Image (tube, rainbow, N blue to C red):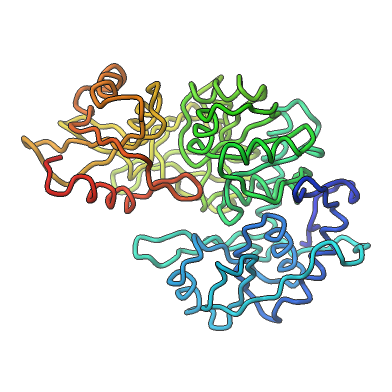
Length: 453
């Protein structure tokens, strides 16, 4: 079954914004058609473009040629070299000459805004693997997660409908998006690029990082406007003390968000904050308005059930765009097949002195302490007095460790209060705001070497 490249929309209305200048959907189709002519005859193509518009044009061009677009976790030479093993003739789209890789053949970028308007809407085979997201495996080899075009259309369409209902709008047409998340990440891909192509919204081409850049990007877009971000970026923005423009919707994902921060964001921006729960395997699964409820509600026709596997309980999502029952990597508390509470990742659970909790739960309470700008728990391999004691790495310039410990004692059980609080200037987060076990271990080695944890 063939599906249109763009959802029904006014082709002369903005699909994107570049430095405050609108780019119509009609011009986007023309730019994509010109880029498609420059792609190699055979796919796939690695899309490394950091400019969100260039990225979207490259994606659309690939779809027009029937190519899969690969989205690697990073553009490190080693990562790209590994991709050449299954695809020796692999080519790359890259808009940054400094970041261009000598490992891959570079595809010329078509000039934007000069092609003649495309009069027809391209159709894409719904079974085509439109995108393949590559996540970092424990072995270092990127693990592929292919997404069919029909699956993406179904998933993003259901998410757009839910968001429109939350905004009390018939649809998302006219909504303008600023995103702090890279488009190669599943969340950034779905909630900025695909919300425009398949949901009727429009996105800003940039990826602002600093608070002043984020506010400037928002201010140059007309309302209604949305901010797509992460808890880390959101907290940094709210603590920066800059004047924030009105925002009609804030989307947040990649880590649990505290209700206090959600409420602060809603008061500061004047619009609702919606969290998205999902994973690379299943895409967007559920949403919640965090300031009002801790309960997540599945999107569209998705349903979740629990089952026993090897003596452990696991949770399975299926229905809607998830045609094959897919296990989730989290521990849930189900209210019914569509509503649940998130308790933590299955591999995130820790046991201390016979008690169980999750690192995400501990991080949630650590980051809820007033004055803590960022923080994360880490569980070392060392055992003291027969008990493993967690360590907390904290960014809190105005606090001393005793104050942080006092705040934790009022929030968590005593056995989980860390033996040490290590204050650091920053945590080694990725562009999406995530902290990996590997980066935390390196941080621990730098600060705890030769000391008892």
